Length: 260
Image 1 (cartoon, one colour):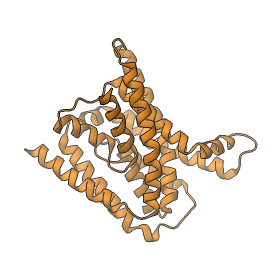
Image 2 (cartoon, rainbow, N blue to C red; image 1 turned 135 degrees about the horizontal axis):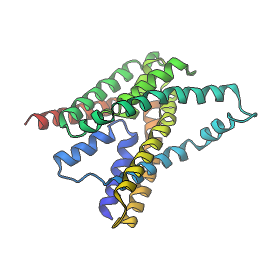
Image 3 (cartoon, rainbow, N blue to C red; image 1 turned 180 degrees about the horizontal axis):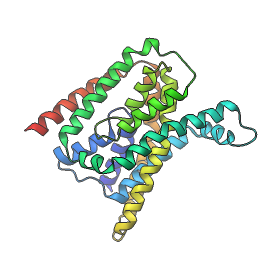
Image 4 (tube, helix red, strand yellow; image 1 turned 90 degrees about the vertical axis):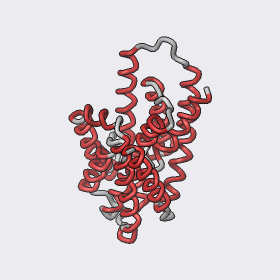
């Protein structure tokens, strides 16, 4: 039960803060001799973080849903189009590069490089903050942020960090870039949940600790909600530098460990 709660805590924190959940999972397994969660538990942990995004942005999602009806505004319909446009790159990358991506999860060097790349992206985002003043999203912005999300399939590359950095680099206001980043994460998280459930069902569910899985899912959701609010506040207050330094230190440690 404690292990499940700990895994839920790690998932909730690292999924949304710009430090790479996949990178921490690999390093925990490689460097700390911690077994990664099983496929079914992984599916439920992703489900917990998916629920966190849905809860925090429930008002936005209601407005987007209204955009599909007659009462919907052109602005909401355009935003739905932006989300679809931004989702295409990760779908293509996931389908074409799944084997290579799965292989990358066995490499500490790849994780180290991914974390350093995340560090550079976060630092660049802060340096571009003064020019990031545009509130309106464009299709090119959605595509660039979508490409950044696809790049985050590589372990060690933070999805939230890279997508927010890409939005700010395009000139979007930090809070606008963060909001779009989180909404764009919904299709990606839903896809991860469905794939994990498919793999889990193929392997069977006998002997599953459903109580532990429930605890892990609830913890992931609750911690995820807190971390989303925390990151939104951090982005507004220009405090991404700390995450950049953290990713640099962890990335260097991973590279050294991989070379030894």
